[in-house]
Image (cartoon, rainbow, N blue to C red; front, side):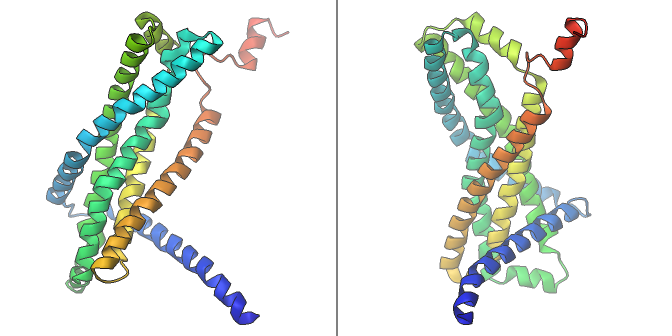
Length: 277
């Protein structure tokens, strides 16, 4: 019974150990960011690499995402007789939810997998160990520039996806579904607010950080050999996707609790308008 119980408890303990090591790496990356010297050349190269492998796929994915959201919401608003709110609903869905997720998934899938493979190859060639022997901090030298590059590119791509997605939604709603351009833009201006953009950018920052840290963590801990590096890349992408969707749920719930939707009248405002009755 004791041997069987211990064999059952081992996978859970191993998972908790991996979570602890991942959290430790994330904390070490945060501590290493302000340290000098900063690897400017490495950071610029990684930013260019992330941007080069993600700009075109992100733009191409944003168009069908915006189209699907606009078509689905346009059909729904026609059924309930609220066509004037199609623009606001589709644009807010793209800016708040679709844009950060699309950006993060492509940054993690294209750039993060390459980072994981690069770090993993250095690990199995014992370059990481050699850097530590020479007194070079591999986190500050290799990990920090890649994580910051993922964050910067995620923020920039988030704006690109928001613009492309909103324009795509506008085109499909107005051209294909016969919507009114003025109503589309007016509803967006009436219900959208600046915090909607801020939460989108905050999500992009957090998603980029998570994608970079997870890719670096799996690259630093391959199972061994080229096959281990390939498995680490697959695991990094899957783990990042799971964490992104979990973080998205938490951030969205917190945002909706803290920031009231535009156009909603609070109880205090109602009482004030009625003279405190």
